[in-house]
Image (tube, rainbow, N blue to C red; front, side, top):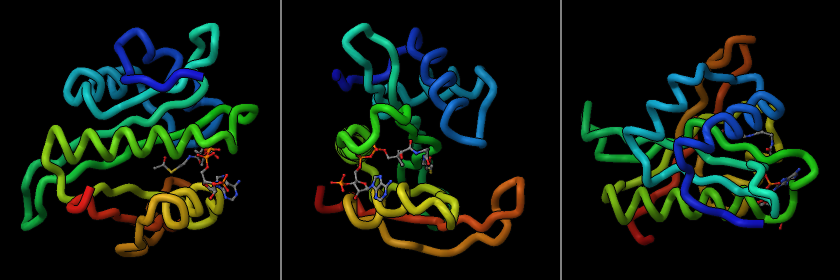
Length: 155
Ligand code: ACO
């Protein structure tokens, strides 16, 4: 298994992985926009044949509305047969490190479905994220989101 920075030629594989794993899907222009605008903070995991089996897609927010510069994880997923191997943890750590080192981000944020036990365990227990607030009916189907944050100040 190889984990590396995402490249433009990976975007089809990332989108395909996303479609298999999550109900939140995005048009190709969204993936391209992220890869072109913030090329240092999104990563992929590939198998020995170079097939994408996991990704993290991230963006940056400039200093605005009283909030300091911070990174945001839009989406992360790992194909079912490659889970519990530590891939998501590694993808997240690489993205967080790049946000802090390259963009001097103060923190990393993300949204996760309230019912998503696996992802919440990854963020809270493994990576140290905390719940900043609950956003009512954030998702299209009416489910609430946990808005989570991790300080990158000491990283
Ligand atoms: N149940 C409980 N804890 C879990 C689970 C699970 N099913 N999966 C991961 N964890 C926690 C554990 O603490 C684990 O450490 P351990 O294996 O030593 O116990 C830790 O997270 C690290 O796990 P990884 O192996 O790095 O996680 P994995 O590569 O399996 O990917 C992920 C986790 C991304 C949540 C995967 O299950 C997945 O793709 N799910 C579907 C898509 C999804 O829900 N994505 C997140 C949506 S929110 C967003 O995108 C911002």
